Image 1 (spheres, rainbow, N blue to C red):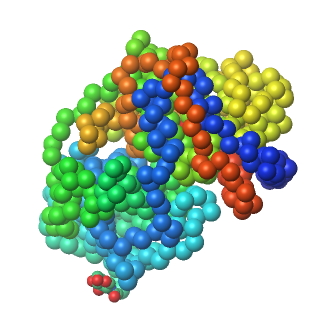
Image 2 (spheres, helix red, strand yellow; image 1 turned 135 degrees about the horizontal axis):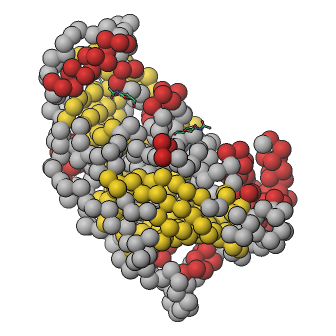
Image 3 (cartoon, rainbow, N blue to C red; image 1 turned 135 degrees about the vertical axis):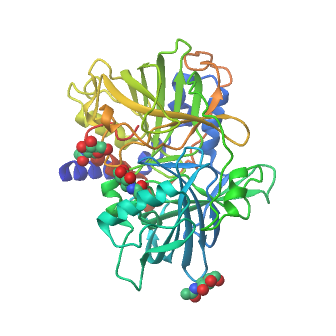
Length: 505
Ligand SMILES: *[C@@H]1O[C@H](CO)[C@@H](O)[C@H](O)[C@H]1NC(C)=O
Ligand SMILES: *[C@@H]1O[C@H](CO)[C@@H](O)[C@H](O)[C@H]1NC(C)=O
Ligand SMILES: *[C@@H]1O[C@H](CO)[C@@H](O)[C@H](O)[C@H]1NC(C)=O
């Protein structure tokens, strides 16, 4: 792998001339060649790229009170809501509320976690993130149902000393600086999420004062045995600042008023049936482990069994510098309700056809260097030119073999504007692919939003309305920036080569 790394570095640097920089900035619509007519979906993806509506301060100012905006799902699954307070003196008080159900209507127990957190350097692994160290001083537990009190008493008996039985509505120290006992293990508890932070300010158009602040914290490992040792590689759903959350967010209001003894009880709801039909796009630039950023566009055709997915990969956290894009097509099974994850639906996906477009010189060189007969026609890759790699059973250089099957988990939701949201399964943190039923996700990725309920746009050949958007400021002259835009690609490819699978999609 290190050989590949050095090789790629050289490829990257040999192109590190002004010529390279210019040509690495392909116009945006290049990556959308399959969809030349500007559709609503297209506009929404373009809007994500424009980026001026999001500002990120480095280092982030995390002082304040931050709230979940809905019932969150963690691997396991665990259903929870969070209410975190960070103070200027570096201390914090984090409330976590756990539930039996996927709408967070039946509280099981609450935790109040106290400690301190110190921001360190900007993250090298996750561009745009800031690393931090934290120290816990106290973790308190309150049970809200007899069932959970008995359940936890049983867990604690096996691993640590606690008074028994636990009494409802009484707080217990499960960990504290002074005492020697540590009962956090039985709760699968960890705060490693505080090791990676990012704050985004989102400005609403036309209203300079109207902005929302979001706090992103590190992710939770998909394997519960790995949780405590995990170094975050992506983010959980963001928390919103109590100062300026959208007042239509009922969950936010309820969560903001809760305390250790009074957990938020969110309004009961029905599970929305999973109806995949239509077009769905990312709502933000998404992070993948291994220094990759991407946006996604899924299209589910009205035959109820075929789909296409378009994955636009970038080297930077605001998705302005494209590296490559992948278009996949295939079929999927009918959904069945998940027995493991309440509210989830299980679907099996197969990819049968795939096209790849290198979007910068590094990727183009990589594909040419690695091709053989294993990734499209040998040495034929050109910047911005899409190739079908179906005949070579995928692309060995990208670690993709066709046909490929994945065991997916889906659920639906709605945003505050009433638009439909589609959540699909979180990918295993270790970078493997959910290609066996037992590897199926128990939590979700950031949602896609429905941008059109028809499949219009996918096969359109109408060139009218084609937009020529520019990527970023189009001209990077500073060599550090060149390094920063090249390195992630190099690293991500090393990662891909190592794991050789579908980690990125
Ligand atoms: C830090 O600030 C908070 C809020 O102002 C206060 O409650 C807490 O006691 C302070 N902690 C220390 C160690 O100074
Ligand atoms: C901890 O995780 C394991 C495995 O997912 C699960 O069986 C156990 O119930 C969890 N403990 C608690 C208190 O949720
Ligand atoms: C990665 O995790 C999955 C389960 O999430 C497991 O089945 C698989 O063996 C793991 N692979 C490696 C290489 O650790």
